[in-house]
Image (cartoon, rainbow, N blue to C red; front, top):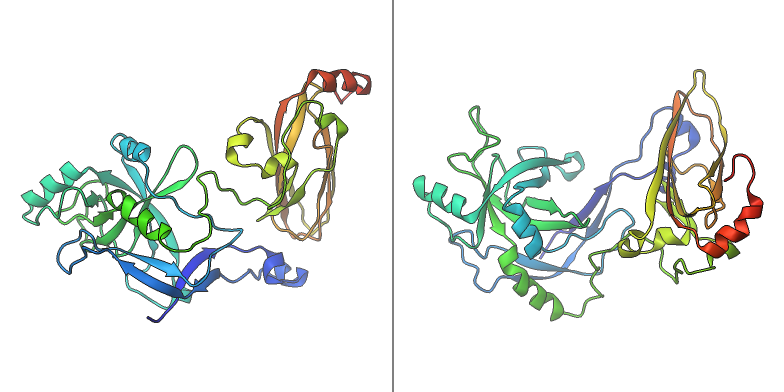
Length: 361
């Protein structure tokens, strides 16, 4: 078994790839970033045959676990998402742009929206075109054309996770009269992943693997975290802070899972842009007050790069101060700030009443 499996193809910032300020000024960008991991074992479906599309899939065990700040795992399809697809039939096709395979460094990934059709519609169309039904419980059809084998169709559930709906088995090439929003004479075929959920889980649990990621997986720092308990915020203890891609976060609440983060309200979002010609530097001091009735529990500052180290003071209280300096930028500099808050406790409100002054309520 030869070759590696490629993950990622994500965008890195200047600090990750070691670019200097002079290189950034003249327009040099970070090269593509991806991870190559060799496989350790391949397990084909026990009922796989060379005939037909059904059961034409296998599971690959990697030689080591995959961890990255830029990628999160995709989930198996759920019953809820399957029922929703009967009403909202839009899925996303993820594939490379080039029509023929090329050197990987010249390939580019792309996303395209397609219309998904039910088993019944797919079977009726294939029988009418004398293509065979291919098994009504294992094959999906979609609009579009020119889909290459191995491409994935995914769905973005309302809870946040991405779910794998199907794996492409191929389709007719595109031509001038191809219908992109309706079924073609030879529509693309996909292996329906949902009927194989039990087999996939049985194979995975039979191997010694690390704990699987939960549905509410977030790219957060490991370590103990504390919730918002009564009278805790008034002590204004030191809050966690750090970078996630190009977003600088401050607040222990930012590092909780999505279940707990939904308990806070996303009450503030603002984008800022500064244009300069000739090049300039910025010294930013931004003060925001939410009022003593609101406790700011999480602040997220999105920057164009990580060449500066911002500070966000006051998280855990009702007012914050954002401070950072920029290097020389040629034309424009932009950043955005988002805040999450919760209702202040009565004891906090009573303690903060004496701190009220114009501009900080």
